[in-house]
Length: 459
Image 1 (cartoon, one colour):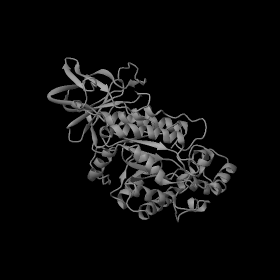
Image 2 (cartoon, helix red, strand yellow):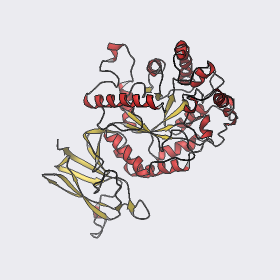
Image 3 (tube, rainbow, N blue to C red):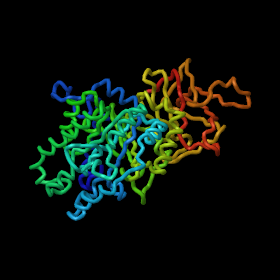
Image 4 (cartoon, rainbow, N blue to C red):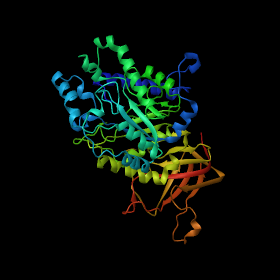
């Protein structure tokens, strides 16, 4: 998913302009203010977009045969010598044999983390097809593994009730390699553009015919706009994310974006498996990224890069399991919600609300810290006073801590776990005791979530 430096900078500039525009102006669709019937374009079904907004959290999977090298996926072909390309295309697939590939294990980890949909790299820019395609020999069937990885992935998604998503690259470095064109194309590539478009449409025909109904399609680069229309034509129930929605990459917008939208992030600094020199995000940072994304109305698509064997790297599994603990307690604030009139901020709290508007969830990311990047340890049985300036109480207001017993009459007076609040001129003051024991050391570094019933926003 990496571009060269100059192209990436240009794309980031365009993305920043788009994010600013979308944050400032309500729109019906992500790419145009015109209604679909006015442009003749096909679009995602509105009811499916609402369903997508309910899911909140997806798992991206970047995996190809060059994971054996621990390199960036596909892009080592860019500016590579012909000798390198010959070895990459002709020799490297001969040693790709992921005998530990177990998509059921992927699903178990993903479900525990609260993931509702997965997006798998069926074909990245290198052109290597991870399914039994009839269009090219450059595919998984011509490796020692010799089995249809996409089929195994789709089947596992369905066994575990996971929404099925595809990543597909309209670019094809192998297509260019066969024509002795530089990986990223160039002047000569234009001569072959129509052939490439026809070739990629054959791929989509296979992917949407051979594996049943697919829920999500993420189109990355190249002629994605044209392919998005083709997906809508052959699979009208499939949601197109990149190619139709706003999909910032490796960044969160400063302001909320009218939904639906989706942001994707690596767990470290590389999409595909990187055995050394990797820098993983902490579990707390991952949790806060999810919280901020949902408060701003989007979905978070967080990446997992399997090892060449097919196993989930331990460091990545650990992050997903820490997210899983937090989600096991607080998933009501993440799934089946909508953004509030204000998103909040990292220094104090982010907000979401139930779709019926009955509950507001205040996710306390800042606690008492003045440093927005700091993590404050909240001790068990420690009481904290929090000022929620954006909210005001009503006579019917009730406040509880998600995951924590609220029936204080069940305990003696010495177990003072009650949540108290009062309205002030500065905002809603809430006094909270964190009583649930989640870590053995009785400290908790991640956001505590309040559920507020019958409250109003001050502005």
